[in-house]
Length: 333
Ligand SMILES: NC(=O)c1ccc[n+]([C@@H]2O[C@H](COP(=O)([O-])OP(=O)(O)OC[C@H]3O[C@@H](n4cnc5c(N)ncnc54)[C@H](OP(=O)(O)O)[C@@H]3O)[C@@H](O)[C@H]2O)c1
Image (cartoon, rainbow, N blue to C red; front, side):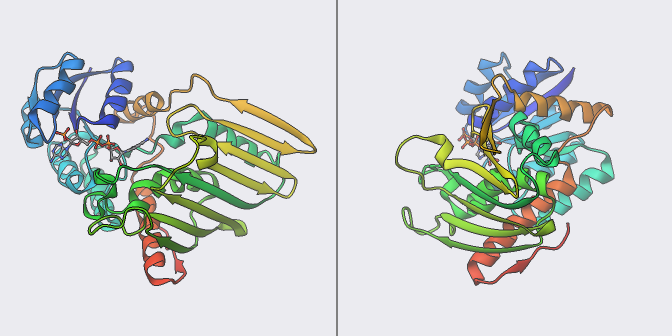
């Protein structure tokens, strides 16, 4: 049994702690949050009574694994501390607020043999795995273009909307939806040209790119537009606000990855539509299992450091392009 310490006690901390406990390969040894009451309420649910309002005090629990589920500004300190304790670290979202810091995390982890994984669970999701198989099998012919939409109704009072606390919408949201899984399918993008605006919540300190349209050029001249942002209104039709359409020379693949559900896809080819639904998929459990396998040396993670450095680099390029109205060449990580 590995000793798991959790920093943060919000929505994602619950989801990933439950996934870790479901593996039956960890025991919860301590929880820290900004407020002690929050850490206590969280820990109580999982039968743990070691709680702090200062994450460094979790060192006294001697964790093997630290799960980091905090706003991104504080996350960098938490990850540095977790690596200093010698622990393996699963970072719930983007690994760092800058590519430079992501590289430092990667170097530190490599030097001491710690596993570090970023929390993008899409690469563990059956819907994306099926999309990969179908694209590679040539079911829709040669890939021409991709059109993606990822709209999430963020709370303007939350840290997600705060530029400093989140690191910005491209880093917090676009990396996850859908730069990370698209890179897994299409490779490393070569150029980005992006535009962004702010229309709904525009107060001081709020995210610069509330809504962003990024045009990306992937290898083999695959063209992609990704519209992503924090404004989502109208009917609660998740598929319309959260979809990726692949256009091929012989058909289309429509992927509805779903933010919280299992997702589905459709293949439109030769006048026929084939549908696949992924009921029962458990991507957070699969990711937790892979992470623990990597620690044991029996497997490997899908968002290992070289991958997550690339995700942050691309988010930076998207923001830089939107700010400067220039096309930016994205170097390899
Ligand atoms: N599917 C996905 O993979 C996915 C989806 C959404 C978000 N995310 C990522 O998940 C992570 C967590 O997001 P969330 O939505 O769960 O956030 P959240 O619900 O707002 O929770 C944040 C938690 O961080 C704690 N916290 C804040 N400052 C702290 C500090 N200095 N020390 C210790 N704890 C501190 C807060 O403590 P209090 O409770 O005391 O305030 C709170 O419990 C982020 O990295 C986000 O990008 C991933």
